[in-house]
Image (cartoon, rainbow, N blue to C red):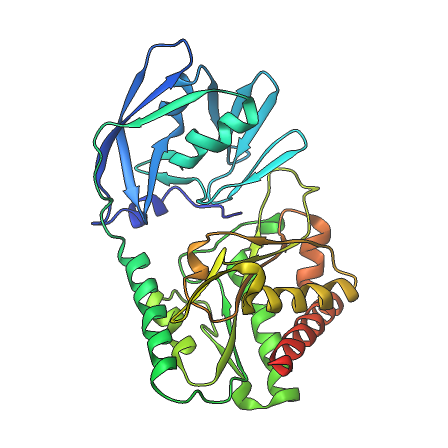
Length: 354
């Protein structure tokens, strides 16, 4: 769920992998509406909310003060936050496969929001038709991620594996990408970097200097290859990706753990429930819960940063920077120490069980 994006990042997001197409939306008993401005990116189709909502007989507007888009419905308002993959209508909360984002100055959502999530929330019957069927242009980020994990799996099959006891910690975002922005200007990139450094120190002190790698150790941006480079080293047992969230409602709180829907290896594919990522997530959840933290759940989700493969990988959303309690627990030294100890115990349990 999951990021505040500044309007200025729209230009950065555009690249050669964007392509135009057309789709047709039809609400039952209504005249079909053709949307001409359609973008492909990272394997997903993105549509502007200002184009989609009139076709579905809905209205919405951007609230510049609250930095969110409000969709008015007969059942209440749906808040859509740029970069945040969670949407809420009353007590119903859904997690989108792709977070809404600004592209060319307009807030856009991926097609699943139009085809599945919004109709499910509102009980609508929507017909969605692609008028220009084509293969989406390959996303360099997706391709390089898949190729990386393919090479990693091939490498594992060529030579005897080194003892797998090293953990790679990936603090999200960095540099010009702040990630989520919370209370008092707290940024995700800074909060998760501090947690990563403290966890790295704990592992080095108790397990040894060679048992941990950070993808970044300061405030700078990384290319995808740079972020994944430590994962390709010999003896890597697990990848931990650290993030934090922001939400419209300040009471929203809790820790979420995400794993791949399926684990893929040279021997085939298996559901998340039977893989190393789920075992790692369960070890982390148990340790965090034992330490008194609110773990909202372990969710299989097709999030791009998790990639493909069978390397045990968990993406942790460590809390909501827009919730005073979560922010304090992520930044107050005594609570940081409890969090670091719990993460360490979960990792240690998992690695030793292998």
